Image 1 (spheres, rainbow, N blue to C red):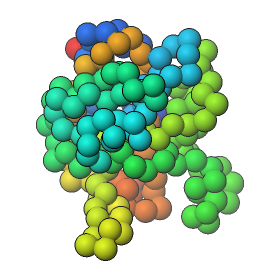
Image 2: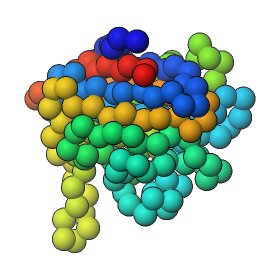
Image 3: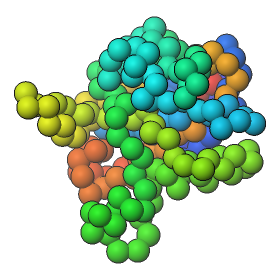
Image 4: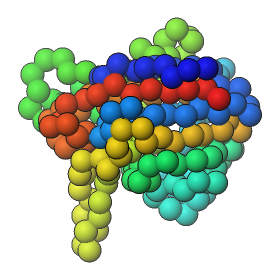
Length: 196
């Protein structure tokens, strides 16, 4: 399968069978991708808090297995052709987040992108789990304060996951344009994926 583009500020979802892999490509560099997985027919989903405990780190490395909220394997990070500055701690942006940032009215957001992407599959999560924020450059000071800087990913950087079980994978090309979550002067860019 060739590359499928996710337009800037939008989301996508697809079924991934156990043993299949998905490569997420930062086609223009500097773009964050919120990334989730759900097990159809249940409330079980890929869980960042449970995965952090399982792998013992707050940034995944190749070979790490990310787990569900029931601590069952869901995805294995097979390959990381990026600086590896992914974030497992940030909640997805949503309307309330943008309201706190002073936005009046609608602003595209990852939580809504997730819901729209899953709707054709008949999945409506009761809440939006914390995503794996691919390429997100979170930094920690000596006093443990966390800041977000522009992504270090360049055009063509990618990450590849292998499904440990059948799941729905969802992604959002993060629409954040008020803070330096994305590069390009905070202008969100398209990204792409391929099923291998």
